[in-house]
Length: 129
Image (tube, rainbow, N blue to C red; front, top):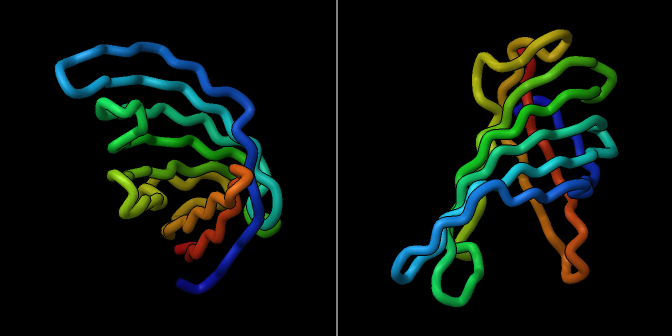
């Protein structure tokens, strides 16, 4: 990827919409709001579907996130797609074709780190087409 932006984000809302208990698993639908700071500054609106096992910890989730703001001085919006499974990893990619404004043509991948205190930091590797 050609460019990198880094910073942090905070969850400003976590609103469970629906939960469905099944034998051995619980399914959930959640709305999440975020505020990004750093190379990417703005807001994210997330729609997430998750499943957790008997321990209650999320075992897997998929989500889409509409991001609006400024990336290294360019204003616009785009969509991330999140995929995560157990504790082996999370993939967060820009959905091709979703860039708008000065972020039209964006592609890339966001790398997420959560420290022991729960603070979230990111590195976004991206290209503008």
